[in-house]
Image (tube, rainbow, N blue to C red; front, side, top):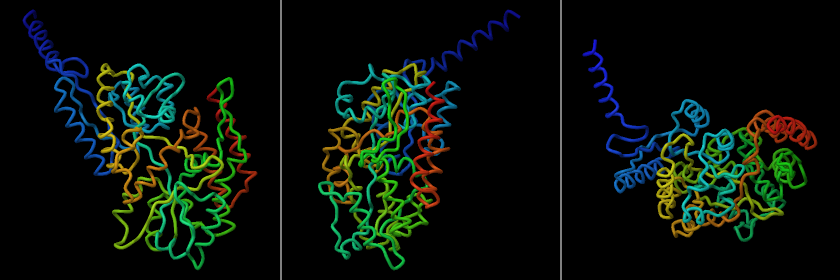
Amino acid sequence: MRAKWLIGLVLALLLTGCTGGAGGKDDGTITLRFQSLAWQEESVAANQQLVKEWNATHPDVKVEYVQGSWDSVHDQLLTSFEGGEAPDIIHDASDDLADFAYGGYLADLSDLLPARLKSDIPQRGWETTTFGDGIYGVPFLQEPRVLIANAKWLKESGVRVPTPEHPWSWTEFRQITEELGGDGKYGIAWPLKEPVSATLNLSLSAGGQLFHRGADGKVTIRFDKGDEVVPRTVHDQANTDHSASPTTLGSSGSDTLPGFFGGKYAMVPLGFSYRQQIVQQAPKGFDWQVLPAPAGADGLSQGVSPQTLSVAEDSPHKKEAVQFIDFLLRPKNMVRLALGDWMLPTGAQALKDPALHTADNGWATGTALAAHLRSAPAQSVRGYPEWKDKVATPAFQEYYSGAIGLDELRGRLVKDGNLVLARYQR
């Protein structure tokens, strides 16, 4: 019996030596798991190459690249957090962080971030990842919503073509889409399968806020004049002017591209990164251009939810994880990631890179909008996902289709919405 016990003890010690401590090998090397949500070929290649470069120069801290998916990231992260198996470094979007931050799953990076990185990203960027008194992610990629236009159609129509310096107003935009439409064609195709974030983010330009935080810290919903501008424009284009295609209101952005290439719509409002799909899919000779979204009382202001990098609270190597994030987001590396994803970097130094100021594929237009991007209105509102799914999405869809009027929309967003939020703020 004693011999068997000794053999068991030796085996146990050998196994312990082989596995080492959590996140490290027996030779002292630390291994960090980096879950990336990059999915476009160029973006995956850029991320993997940067991991390779880090590993080549940091023999004591190795990074393991783990491929995640935007389609399932929230549930997958929740499961991994609760199971104690979360990756050390987490790629996500800022509007997905609130519940994880308040739930104690993400590390507060306030005292871990290097001064260089903290000063390079403007304060408006940090606001997207600040919950309470802590910073729970590093915002690094962002994209404005822009108008992708049929350049030949616009030129032949003779309408004034907007620039970031002289954009269309929302009123002028409605008039121009009406002028461009006719004969079975439409001036605009709104892909509003997911209408809430698009509506709220664009509404910042007109002074719309919707969510208002009181002195007690609690959030309530008001649907004021500024909040009406964008919804009313879309509704009237689709139901009064008939300048917007009614069939695309329930479509995704990708769904509108065949009709756009086929000359059915003059313009489509899309996220900046859709340019890659257009470059890949547009017929040979198709002439397109990027235009700024319309401006309102607050100019070109627009809400965004940047892509972020966070550190798991359970990670035993938070300091090293932040060092890797700092490496990944050096200005030149941030540009590589932005070009790979066809998005804009958040860093001030990266935004100066000449590659982001070329007229090719509308890069210069998008980069000119970076200074106008703000934290999305619902960024830190607890209960927003439920409000969006159960109240706002069906209400906006019915309003845009013409099934309900503006007063009914307001009532549902405000009355039903405040009942939902109240449950999260007791």
